[in-house]
Image (cartoon, rainbow, N blue to C red; front, side, top):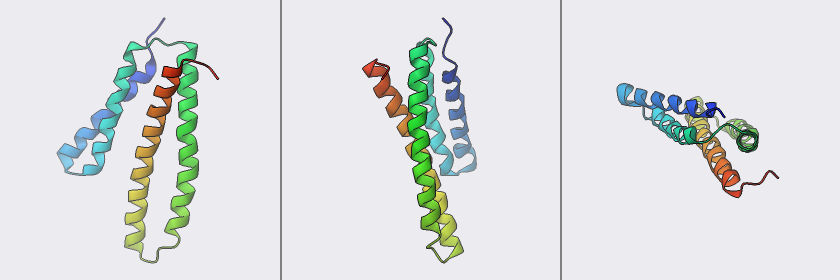
Length: 116
């Protein structure tokens, strides 16, 4: 069996180093991608692929529900500066929630071990 290619998402965590170089703290969220290196131990099989797909679906549903809420909420803000600040913050928070949803869902599916 071959190694799981999803572990290469851990390389995205290197973008977090841009936060140290530029001083922009928004890049520090990318350090969370280093957690994908933990999947290097898993072999690539059907159950792993199935659990990845299910966890990805959960994260996708979070984005489908979150982004319309952000757009509707932004439409009620009058000031352009406040609107941009709110949307940038909401976008960052939603990104974090998506990643956490994916990781937590995947871990739960892997621990259960069934293919429901």
